[in-house]
Structure formats: structure tokens, C-alpha cells
Length: 148
View 1 (tube, rainbow, N blue to C red):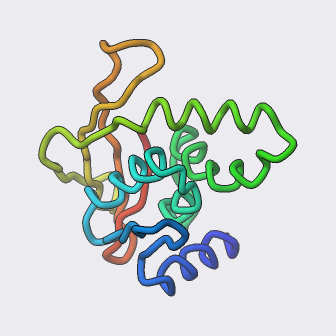
View 2 (view 1 turned 90 degrees about the horizontal axis):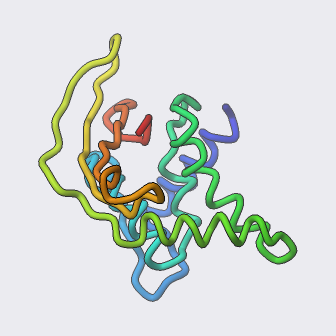
């Protein structure tokens, strides 16, 4: 938990910007669309460090979201790990052409506010599964990936 809060703090101190590319992506955590668009940015630019900034600082979320957030850590292992390279290549293929397709809707789960962001991507099982909805959770006015 302390590790997640530290990572989020570092993301905030970077002014919501991931630096390292010629054009940095600015995450607006108050906008759930911006958080989802950060996934597509990471896949298009191979700037995987942004992915660690999208996780719920409370460590909640489903397995798919936790795998997405772990992409930044996996990217550090590619020098000698063919499996890591393969997973990153799959991430790029799956999310590189992703885009948001409809309006964000909102709801509640227990006492938490959720946002639902519909998007399309290159699902490995085909076009019939290429439309998904990313669920984000609001933590103190900021949105984070929660499930999809």
C-alpha cells in the first residue's frame, strides 16, 4: 500500500505528466476519459512508465486492471526476458489502436463513485469482443482504473 501511494505521489509531483518522450502525455485525473486515454498513449508510444500512475492508490481493482498497471514494471525486465517482450508486444497490438467511443456514464458501487468509459480495442479473440467498458473508481476527486 505504501508503495502505491508513493508511486501516485510521484505521478502528482510530475504534474500529471510522464516525461521521456518528445511530447509528454498529461493525465487529468479528474477526467476518467483522460485516464483511459493514457492506456492508448502508452501502447502507441511504448512509454510504459505511465501505466503505474493509473492504479488505484488503495490497491483495489480486478486482475485485468492490475495486469495493465504492472506493464510499467514488466517493461523494466525486457533486457533478458523474452516473455516480457512478448507481453509488451501484445499490449501494444491490443491497445495501440484503442479509442473511446461513447460518452462516460456514472454510477455507484457501495459508497464509491464509478465512471464507465466505453472503448474499442484490438481484442485478441476478435472483433465481436473489441468493445469494452473500463470502470474507474473515484478516490478523493481523482479517477483510477478499477475493472474491465
